[in-house]
Amino acid sequence: MGTGGDAVGALGALPVDIEQSHAGAAKKILIVVENLPVPFDSRVWKEACSLRAAGYAVTVLCPRGKGYTKNYELLEGIHVYRHPMPKEGNTAFGYIWEYGWALFWEFWYAWWIFLRRGFQVMQGCNPPDDIVFVALPFKLLGVKYIFDHHDANPELYLSKFEREGFFYKTQVWLEKITYRFSDVVMATNGSYKELAIRRGGLAPEDVFVVRNGPDLKTFKPAPPNPALKHGKTYLVGYVGTMSIQEGLDILLDVALHIKDLGRRDIHFTCVGGGPGLAGLRKMVRDKGLDEMVDFTGRIPDRQLLDILSTADVCVNPDKPCDMNNISTMIKIMEYMALGKPIVQFDLKEGRVSAQAASLYADNRNQAPDFAAKILWLLENPEERKTMGEFGRRRVQEELAWEYSVGNLVAAYQRAFARRGR
Image (cartoon, rainbow, N blue to C red; front, side, top):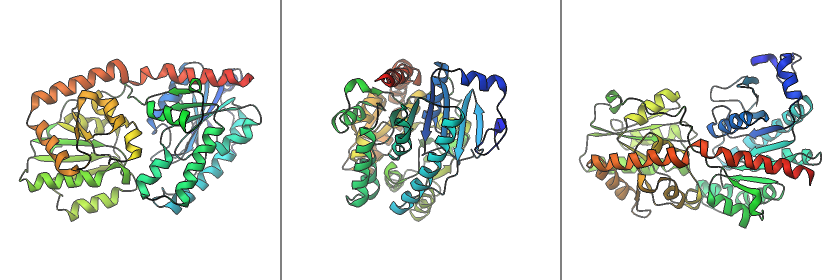
């Protein structure tokens, strides 16, 4: 049982002042996220905190996992409920089991939360696109639904499995249903806004771009630590999820290409967890890259900042595909916030975010050109400095989370305005 004793099936009451505060709040919202627990999901946590600061009574429903196992916590005035979750799926049928299990618990927890404290707007954060089914009964009661569009799931499915069939068509159908019953859509970039209008049929005034920039109050550079370079002259850093579409197999080919060129002065450190981590570590051994590449797994934020702050170059090896072409990766803005030059493939939204803070490798001549871009940056420290400074300024002046809060609040104002319609 978590902080405050407020869990499903628990009889304990919250402190009177908190209960009365929320009972009197005019605008109550429920955010449902299935992919990650909160506050580990940094985007959802930033949203929740910003909405709380704007005067909303905020409840979050998410899975347990990744060190967050309490049924309930009251964090910074936000009620966080966590439901049981099976092991993360990595096959089509694994995803069905994972999502079906989550949908079951989301449905019952949502009703318990509705009866316990109420909400007028529900926000569903994909993936997957089935959270709309949790919202549908509440829409009959006047609750509005906001779709927080994190991933384009049909494209995500193709990036993972590279085939169209029953499961792909299911993703297309789920997306269509989600758009159909969404009152407001929050898109992470212009490409996703275009999908909501063109593919989803939403009116432009019902779609708000809420980019996922870093919070500069907490995401700050640390002093470089030469010990983190593993005795090498240079460090190449990466942070992200370890899964198929992230292109980490390409990054290992890049490291192997550099090794075959005779370079022994460069180390690659990759930070993050995910279903592909064990397979990637095996690939490191099979390719003979043990002395050149390490995968840390999930580590505390302080260690992550130490590594990325020490890196000479940061990379985004997301493989060229439709999904990655239209998606914005938070790692890009995080690298920029730390003043790091970047190498990534030439993808639409990657260019929109990074602009002159990045070099762009050839999407066809993948590993050799990516390696060449890294080596060029390592050999040109002044260019690294110029690119890093440009990226840092761009985040400070345009892309930090603070610049997304206005559109986030506007999306909720739109949803509450539609309650009378």
